[in-house]
Amino acid sequence: MSNGLLKCINAKLYTIHTFIFRSASVCLASLTLAAIVACSSSWSGADRQNAEHFSRALEAAQKATQLTNKAQPGVIQTGIEEILQYQRLALQEAHLVHDSVLDKAHPQLRQHFRGEFEKGLELVIRSAEMGMASKVGPTSEQLNLAITGTTLLNEWIEWPMYIG
Image (tube, rainbow, N blue to C red; front, side):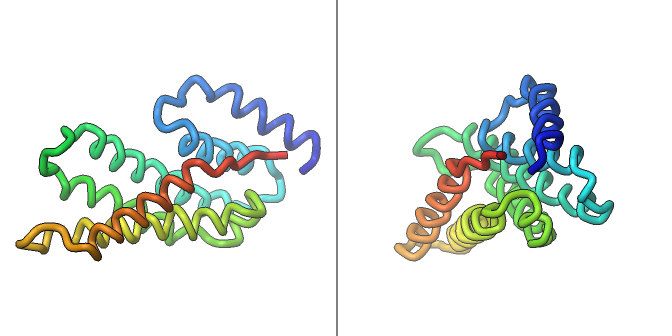
């Protein structure tokens, strides 16, 4: 990346850093991509428009996480339908992001976004759907899906998408 692009990105990130009130790494990933798109002349209008799906996917996943975190430990979750609605929206938006947009933003973004964020959501959603359909309680398959999905999502959150 050119120095001019890096300066522009850093200025954009500095301007909006005070609005980070959600999970810092998830929000930072979204803001970083937004800053790259806003500052780079090499992004076409179609690329810029498609990058919005990335931000919407992260926002929907964050809303699902906020609802999940409101639940009391040990209590069967109320509002699971609303949580699943946001998780499904996040996955739907994630599927709409073009690989070329992810590749243009960061050389490893596609690998992490598809392999951790998207795959993690798929597994967590499938686990929750199995749980809703079950009359006997969680199965080992459901628990394995939930654990694997959550682990992948945690890896996504912990991945540092540094620019430079």
